Length: 298
Image (cartoon, rainbow, N blue to C red):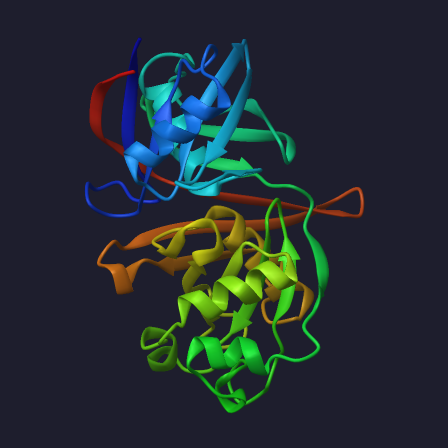
């Protein structure tokens, strides 16, 4: 069996930026074991598999190198950029075309923004944000991150981390100073054990330069699912904007997350939160670029 497979840099419009994802557009006849083996072979943080297509509805599954996950933000951006770029989704001259992905986190909308007939940006709806819980004793967590309690928070205030999900549960960890965020020294084995005990995917650490800032710096660590650090994370940044809004750290409904600088893979993630029928709706978006188009033989 031969399959077309793509490697796509998501949340960047330049090669070697953003977060690379594998994309298989014709995965209907693949078993779960084969999908897992392809993801392992690609050796990227996630590989997405489109297992069915019908008009504006696409069933998508996501695999890390070690397991399947319910949802993946950067792989969603990569997948729908590729579907549109390769003609599986018909382009329009200008404006927004909305399609849907059926995932293990639910049926979620994807907005494809076209400009002069070309894909400009992809925005994905995420699962309804929810606070899973707080961490009663953060000492093991901050020790695994190589920091102390006085370095946790925003500006001069200690603000404790929370577990939030917009499809995948993450620990949202505020860091007061950017230089501390840049120099985090992670004990990956310990962090994986903490993540397992708390039932989370990983930790999304951030530095907010000021209250109501239009941008935020972020880093993401998920060793439990085989990802020591990730250059761009959609679901985690969705959880982050919910955390910022809920804790009155921003007034606007939009913020830009800059991630991946520590990995020399700069990423730009556009985050949006709105209220609809008294329910928060989170969308995350960005650019993408296909860097490899090839065939995998099984």
